[in-house]
Image: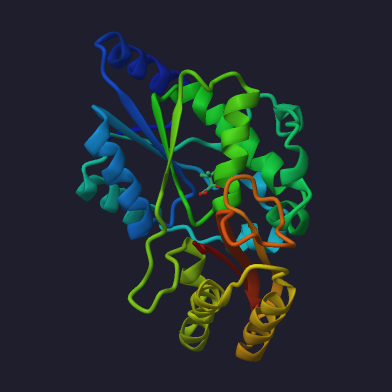
Length: 283
Ligand code: PAF
């Protein structure tokens, strides 16, 4: 695996590969890698000539400074994992490589509705930060294919919108890969590393609640089932930010389900200090 720290060096190297007609797959991450990331990497490896991964804990996407401070960093282990998985290139930039003109000048993105709901509503500014970093990473890597995890369902939609807004729709194909889960159902996430033993046991309640929604959703207004789900989380010791049921294609909140529309249930909830999110397609 070749490690690049400078955007200009990586760009130059990738240019040579593109000239040789090689296809580039890209897996952006914030490190603290787990099997979910490695599955993205494997998908990219199977479908491209070269796979680039990046590790950058992006300060602009943390609306909560405590969350940023406590975000797990396991860089040595990450490098080993990537190497074992056969990653071709790791981009490990500093803040000034990503934001050479400063954070304030990194632009604003018109994300419309997405910024008013779910993560957009509960984490103000979060998606602006995600778009800033992803735009910059795409500008540097210029991949043919981009691989993201379904675990961050709304983020996938936002990045889809970013690709449209930046006119990259024809040149980059985004693939959303399924969420990987632990044996008991807990969605793999870097933030799971912050859970203590007791919290780790409780954490599966999010998966159980999503499964409850999937099993019990009926045509009509889903308010009462959402209330039941909310209660289940609170009883387990969570402080939910939201339990929502939305159109799986555009995230419009569903108030009257016709029994056919494709649905996704989405949950964000705090377990003490740690905020977990997960989602499940319902039909
Ligand atoms: O999902 C993540 O890890 C991050 O939000 C991403 C896409 C790497 C941007 O920092």
